[in-house]
Image (cartoon, rainbow, N blue to C red; front, side, top):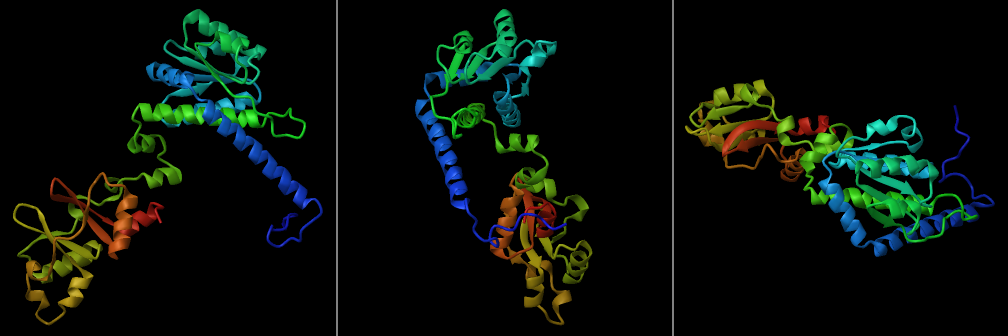
Length: 333
């Protein structure tokens, strides 16, 4: 079915286009100014919030109503994916049994631009009754929520981006940015690493980018390794059977001394080739990978050296081989 919308590069300009573009730019500029003002306003309360969250032994419970609730769900997801177990609890549902989701050791972050959201009252009362640390994210200092909180993160006053100044736009964007700031600062405080991130993001492009060489390499009998004295007749058989276009040459101690590739075969092509030893044909040394190296790094090395495979060394011994096709199949291209 043909789309009713023409591609932007093909349709002719229309009356009102300039006005729409100007409105879009105005919204982005107003929201950007709100985020900039937030950055300038961060103070000791932010550091206190990070201290509190770092000490939390349970989960971080996020709660908020309406648009603040939607922002809260995203903040909970970001915290959870960056090493701080988190869960969103709807304040309305909390009043009808979901307070039971809040367990000993949990901290609570409550979002309300006005600081007077009535639906939050039961969650706030529960936090105070059972000693759950409470962080407020609000647009009003001195509000009910701000006064009840152990730490109040007060968003500086900024105009909403809509023409009537009422629809939550700037305020929700700034709350979202503040949630990201909390998550990243807490992540850095905890020393959350790329390895940790991969554990939480094993699928998709993020997971692919963080794959390690050890996740892709071939090991055991699949690795083409032969000794220095092996005749090239046997080298050719092993190279053809294993299909990597390379054979690693090892000494008596199992250390990698060199590599024989298709290029080495071409350079030494003669009737006498099959009677030579691997030592006589190999290229000494050679670039290798480490098991913990990111697979994307290994791919970059192969591209830079114009080679198709890397032997993988651990403790100065070859333990595997990774081929450029392994990286491409993993979606690293």
